[in-house]
Amino acid sequence: MRIQVFVIAGGIALLSGCQSFNQTTRDATEQAQPLVQQAALVPPTIEKAPIEEAIELTDVWQRIRLGLSLPVPDQKLVNQYRDWYIKHPQHLERVSQRAEPFLYLIVEEIEKRDLPIELALLPIVESAFDPFAYSHGAASGLWQFTAPMAKHFGLEMNWWYDGRRDVPAATVAALDMLEYLYKKTHGNWLYATAAYNTGEGRVLNAVKRNKRQGKATDFWSLDLPRETERYVPQMLALAEVIKNADKYGIKLMPIKNQPQIQVVDIGGQIDLALAAGMACMTTSELHKLNPGYNQWATAPDGPHKLVLPVDKAKAFNLALAETNPDERLNWERYQIKSGDSLGVIAKRYHTTVPALRAVNDIKGNTIVIGKHLLIPVAAKSPEQYAYSANQRLLAKQKGKSGNKVSYTVQAGDSFWKIAKAHKVSVSQLTSWNNMAPKDGLRIGKKLTIWTGGKQKNASITRTVNYTVRNGDSLARIASKFKVSVNDLVRWNALEKSKYIQPGQKLKLFVDMSKVRA
Image (cartoon, rainbow, N blue to C red; front, side, top):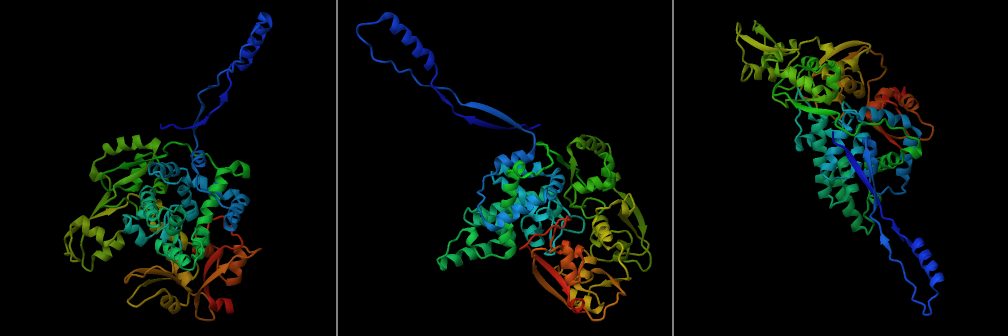
């Protein structure tokens, strides 16, 4: 175990032996009574070595507190966010619970690179430490990467795997991006953090604009998007609250200052249920630590890695070594029949056409009646993989009323066009399919739509930017715009506690026909 030790040194200068030396001199003078008085002797000043007190850090939060170094200015937004966190201590309590498996890893990576420890707080701002978080802006994971930026910084995304939700991989990519932005913004961490939210172009252009106008160019003087103007203050407010948690009455669940997880190289594809059994865990417990895997198994082409609790890794490695590689997946030998296609077979077996091609070394879409295909199949029923992409989507759709319709996206389609044709709102359509209004639509993609609801007018969806006022609540705002509280939470990537504060900006996708009714 790595023991983190901080040394607090205090140099204390003492006039050693002064009192006893002077007393001896006085006594001798009184006894001898010399005729010639000698010059007074000045005792030497002896400096003792600094007293060092070693503090063993047992809590990662304590380690973060001692490392915080960015100045926290007396700014209105910083103070507003600080006060909000103080008034809602349960938010950080929940965040601390979610952060437990991953925070040590993040802090280690940050310190290894000699970056500001404040960056470890960005996943709180971004996702409240929920690796399954998905925003209306199509950002995903703990660090809320969009697809283009994820690809740019080396994260893979496919049907099997989404590196944005792979916490170790996404942490490396996020810190790579922040280091890049720090250099691009000329060594200014507030600029770099703002650029992480909105892009370096906007930040650098805002600086140039202020220079041309003879204005100050510090972060607080820049004209940036409203979300970005609140992003940096949130991080600094968190730093202030966490640094002074005891003062503000904030109780953060202690997180051991030692590795909580271990990344294990498994060498090939494996069924998550089988892997969970090897590690003496439930499938859901394992999948929570490996949210990057979209399906019931790891990706066929990699990464071939699993995140495991430290205390489970040894038993898992032993069990894995004793398992034949061919037994890591369940296989079914399927004979191709008349009317079959790769698409039909893939749908039947909850897999994809590319996966079938890869396993069976098929190029193109041609298959021959009577020939056989090897098909990887899940060891358990789909419901046992509760955190797979499909099961999470089904959980979101559960309890919907009306007639369920499956719609295949065609050339020229848009969310607005599809929603209008089925007399539903864009917000409903995207919500049912775990998508965001800004997401692209791929021809051939299947969408789930519930029809049959009574609507007097065709839906006309508008994007509304709403500023929270004193006395507002999510329920009140939802009622005003005829939307659901759950939609508000999802559109704005809010924490499930659903707390909002005056001045906060919310984005709504409003069906104007409902508002006018």
